Length: 272
Image (cartoon, rainbow, N blue to C red):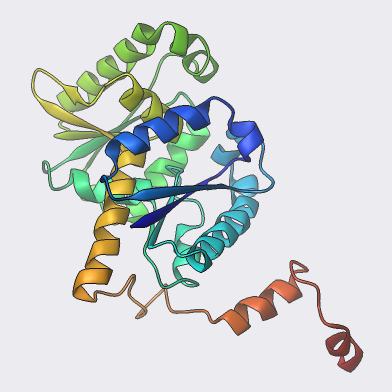
């Protein structure tokens, strides 16, 4: 099985993070799964992935990478961002499963207990987007709430790798708070923080025993499952009955020309 992994920053901008997330996914995948990593072509600042306008533009790149991965023979695609960047749009263009890690982890958490909560980085804009994702998924009734780390994000991804106990304690303390509020399972609502958690083996609260989910690794496992369901049982990659109705290659090329993303043939311009 080949699973494409779309990263939402350029490879150059991803830096040492690339090695960490690759190591986590290699640990989580099946022995027979080959991971094919690909990167968007423009966005270079991780903080831009937590803002509405650059995320809108970045979706176009994420979708293009997904389409290319299908053409290269991928059996499924994981978009490695807990904002599920471009997932819904890509599903309308390809015939392989496309998985968003946040959607995957929220639904999985509901099978571990009745209610779930989210622990994420200290970023009000990002926290707002994650809560919108909960409501969009129709899971508000099973959602307890969210806790943001007290450690500044810049410290988490710099000093935190030298002194991981600082971030570990913060994650576990915020997890205890959300469990006390009624959560039966906890999601790490950040790709970077999820990667940190698995790298430093944070996967549960001990007392009471509560699962803590690295959403990126969960997304990979669901991508494998959905590829198997398609290959072995003939289950479609996605339902075409609603929002994910298929958008043909011809229509994609037509719309891309309208927006200037594909050069318009000279004869077409002449007729216009």
